[in-house]
Length: 99
Image (cartoon, rainbow, N blue to C red; front, side, top):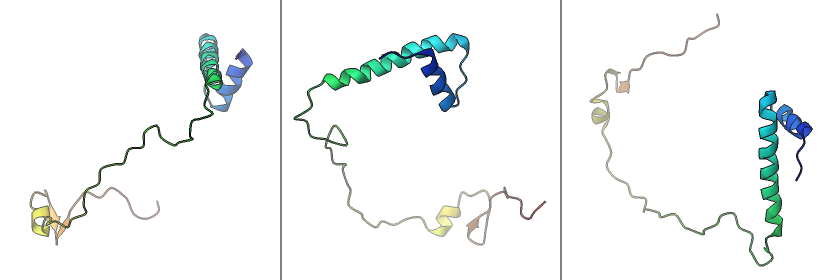
């Protein structure tokens, strides 16, 4: 498929890209090559191929959902640099109120 300089500039404008003069011709060639490859896919005989969303029908391994013991509150807070009344103390990062 033929890609013109104007096609490249229009695509650049639509995608908010700024191309220098030196970048336009390589981009034109790359776009033409991509479109040519996409066009070549039309020659494939796909009449007997079922539509699919994925190339392989693999099921993900699942594990059984089992309840297990977890940390107690004291264990979770044991290595905290600072804690107060059962909660982690962290630096304040949001200022309250309007300026």
